[in-house]
Amino acid sequence: MPSSCKDIRTGLALCLQRSPCVLIDRHTPTECMENPELRKDLPEQCLARMRSYAQCRRGIFDMRKRFRGNGPLSTGVYDEEYERISKGQFDPTTELDKVSKLL
Image (cartoon, rainbow, N blue to C red; front, side, top):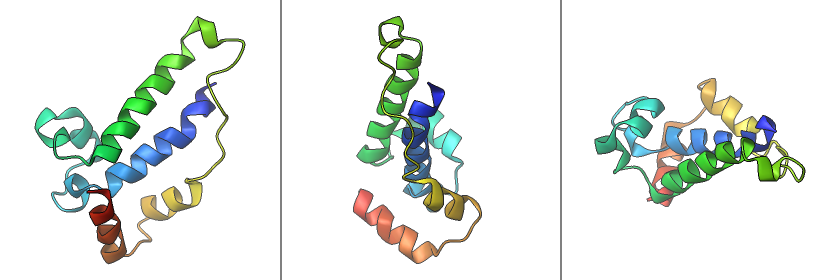
């Protein structure tokens, strides 16, 4: 069941990597999530993904979902894009354009 949250986690990681907190202010994604002052500047899409990831993780331990499952299994939607960004193979100008779409 932990793999049911994989796409949500990867989407959250990509959203945080593209947020102004990481790209412009040069904080780590963990700092942006944990610090309340930095979290209030995150785009609404990232905050929504944080909430959905927390609900997904909570659903792993929910005994009512043990037979039906927590949700759809990972489809690998963000895998290529996540690998590209985590290896540093991206163009900063296009990522900043994506940030402007998030805000």
